[in-house]
Image (cartoon, rainbow, N blue to C red; front, top):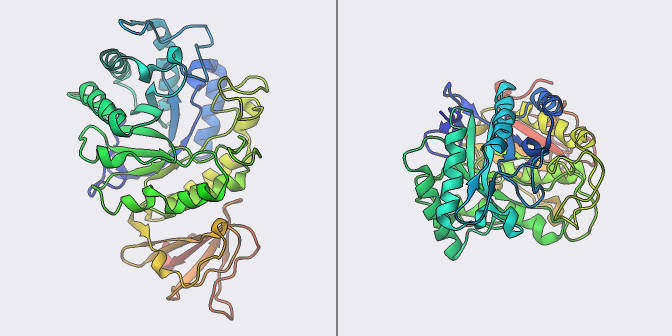
Length: 420
C-alpha cells in the first residue's frame, strides 16, 4: 500500500492521500525501532506527534551504530547466501505500525551503506542486497512508509551504477515512494535523474561547522543543480544533529546551528521538507555514552534527555508557520535582496512565491533585511518561540529585526501572513 504520498504535479514536493501538499518535517531516531521498548516508543512518538512532525526516519536492519536489536536479534546472517530472521522483523513491524498509529509516515532505510562489513547491509553482494530489501518492502507493504533504499552511502561513479541496478530490481512492480540518503555534503543525483523508481532526492549537509560547510548549505550543489535537472523533491534529511560534536571544532551543535542549517536549506531551493536529529536520540541511548562506531561524536545523553532538547520544539514552530502558508509556491529569490551580509555565517536566504504574493527571508545574525521592493506588509517570525511581531522599514530602507538573534521575515499579501 505504501504511504499514500505521491509526487505533486511538477514534481517538486509531495501530496498526501487527500491530495493536499505534504510538508516533510522529519525526526531521526534511526535506531529507535531496534532498541526502544513499546512503552518508550509510545512516549517518544506522542511527543513528536504533539510537536507536529510528519515523518520519522528509521533503520530496519542492524547497522554500524546498532549491531542487534534489544533482544540480541539481527535482521539477517551471512553475506551470501543470507538467512533472514523473521523474528527481528516482528519487532520492526510493530514499531513502524506505531509510527502510523500516531499519524506519521515512517521513512525506512532498507540498506545502510556505511560501516563495518558485518553491520553494513548495503555492502552485501547485489543479489542478496536485492533479496533483503525486497523482503522488507513486502513485509511492511501495508504500512504507511517511504522507502529510503540506502543510507549514508557513496553513490558516485560505479557505486551509482550499483545502486541503480539494485533500485530497479527491488522496486520493479512494487508501489510506494522511494528516496536515497547520500553521505555528507555529496550530490550524486545527476546520475539518478532518469531513474523512474527514485522519487525523493535526500542529501545531508552533515555535522560540520567550518566555513566550507556553512557555505555549502546555502550555495552547494543542491541549491544550484535543481534548476538544471528534472524536478524532484529535494530534502536535507540530515542537517547537524543537536548536541553532536561538530567535525571541525569539536563543539556540540546548538539549537541555533540546527535552526540556521534548516532555514537555509528550506529557502535555498524549492521547499519540500527538512529533517531534524538530536544526539542520543538518533542512536537511542538509554544511558549517557559515546555511540557505537562514532568515537568523535561526543558523549550522548539518553533518548529522553535528547527528546527534550529545544530544537525539536523549534522544528514544531517552523512546521506550524510553513503549513500556514502556500509554501509549495516558494522558490529561491536572492535577486530580491538589496544587500547581503558580509559574513558567510550571516548569509540572508530569500524565497518568494512565483506570483509575488509571499516572501520569506532568514537573517541568521539579526542583520537588517534590505529588499529591492517593499512588500505590502511584513511580520517578524521568531524561530525560537514561534511568535510574530510587526516589521517596519527603518530609515535605511531595511527591515531591522527586534534583536540581534536569528529571525524570519514573512512579507507580502496581508491575507497570507501569520497573525500572531
